Length: 405
Image (cartoon, rainbow, N blue to C red; front, side, top):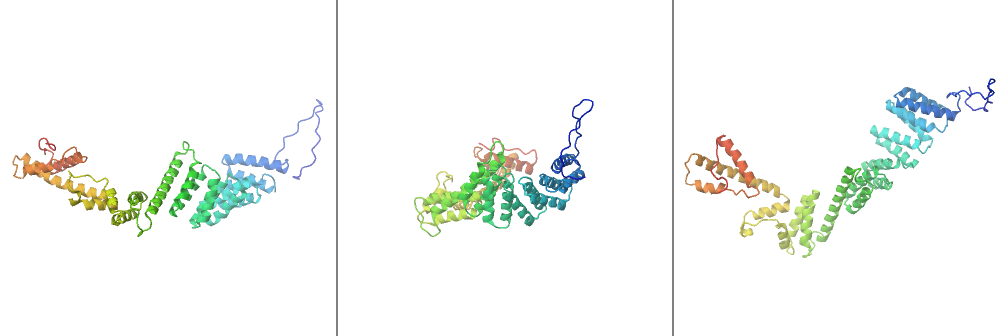
């Protein structure tokens, strides 16, 4: 039976009624190739959705056997998806290439996209890249954002920043709300690593414009934090520029302020060593040393009017602040205080319980009466109470009115 269409048959007439007789419903075998392809694709898709992959693949194959019909690209992509789901990756890729070869703007682009994904899934990056380039060559706006983003990441993995940047920028320029922010974040990260915070800030600002904060709060927060980091890096660069290069004279008016701002900002980016160097430089510069030291000590407390310069721990505090190790120093100091307090407190409580206060009892009593209105006073008292219970048993009792007079 020939597949070429012939002249339409003359309608027959019902002799009983004199009206034209109904024509029989055509089957796929009696349809013209284009119409037959449409019916086969429709049925194949229905079968695929019902899980009858083998039969769906057969019908898609029949469409391809019809030759160059308008539905060839659609059938080839359908076959690729069905075969891929069935685990026949090689067959799926062959079908993808058949769809790509048609040049169809929609299904050819989708087949190139599917082909690229099969290679990425298998870790075949060298094969994935030309497939992604095919997607870009089709120019279908629906598939350009993921293709450019994939090509950017492949170029980045290869160490080609300029090529990666071009694809990241193309992704952002598409205005895609899903892939654009991802590209902006990736590009900004690389720009920050390269010491270009101003460009990173511009990329992140463009990415934030693509996000609806209410529908994508996590994506918005991610880019907002990255933008803040870019601003920090810009600030660090500006403060460093105000100080000039090492060995250059420092402006006595703005130098101390720039030193403090730089030294207190650097640790926020994990650059503690550079922060220590900033303090050291300011403290050793005769033109700025006094003002820098005053800024370094701005949060130091007083000690009942004692001359701070005569307190043996003052140099340790200065050094600790400059090196960013003040929490460690405080931890060591409180550990020592807790230990000494417990030793004195247990002896004081034991003497009081035995009603045999020694000559040192009153002195020890004064030593352990740490006022409760100290910020850390109640916590020290709780620690001592627990130590006393462990040392003297559950019947241990604290002295009357302890710890306050």
